[in-house]
Length: 408
Image 1 (tube, rainbow, N blue to C red):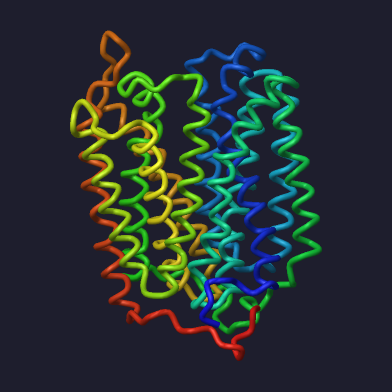
Image 2: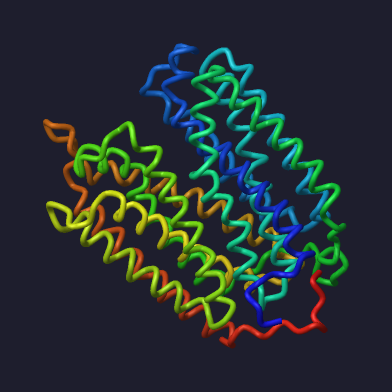
């Protein structure tokens, strides 16, 4: 099948997985914008909000390390259902928080289950979708990020405004429980990886794993040096109005949705190197024209949309290639280790960005050009690592998927 359209049976499964990924990301993304609301209600100092947000990532990192040892011992559908149910209940428990300690405990639990759910989603994609369609399938599931930016975060903020800060925790938790039921009805039992002779064998680090982690590390470090500081940069350095910031994130999500689809099809039809290289060049150009040159030559909408869209496209290409690295019997453990590495790298980059920046008298961020240059240089490592990884794996064009290839 040479069409860019995925078979109906695959689309039904991917819809459920994309919805799970959407809820998982929304659970993480909605908390910090709501920070001032629950901080005032619970008496949490604004200076401590970073602990609330970071607790989710910290838990996901630790669980990712543990998952790299255990996840492939479980049947995939059951693991997904248990993790999504746990995510829903943990998220709802956040609505019962009475102070900083109880809210952090709820977010630690949510991060633990959310980290597993994200890993299992992409393991199922790699299990069920042939390589010739895997780039497109990865883009479909990854679109949960774009939808969380476009719809989820604005809706959560409005729900908090109308119903109080506890309401989004309850609604997102109930949605997760509903999706767990949907996964039970829609997904087949997935235990083929358990029936292989090498099932349960420990992960064996090799050069391919090293280059995979290098590609993700360069992309994530460069991205998260900038992401935590972009709202302030857009407002105080580029003069973008605060009241329209939500619309800007919606536009960035739409741009990501389009570029992820394009990168998925391009990866399937040729190889991961070309979309990864093109996205890296475009990210570097965006940073040069939007940050390195002062005053910026790009309008805020173009700068933010290009930055979000190109980074999303690069992530799809690298992730689709990475899905070919581990054998099926080690896929979930490999992706769990990869996610733990990604969470740790994103946290390290966010903390490191503080070393570059100071705040000027007018609120402008001082030091953003140095930060952007560092991010652009790190980004150059992505296509280099992808090139070496494809060489080690024996690059071949994506094989056409024929009628003889089963959907599952």
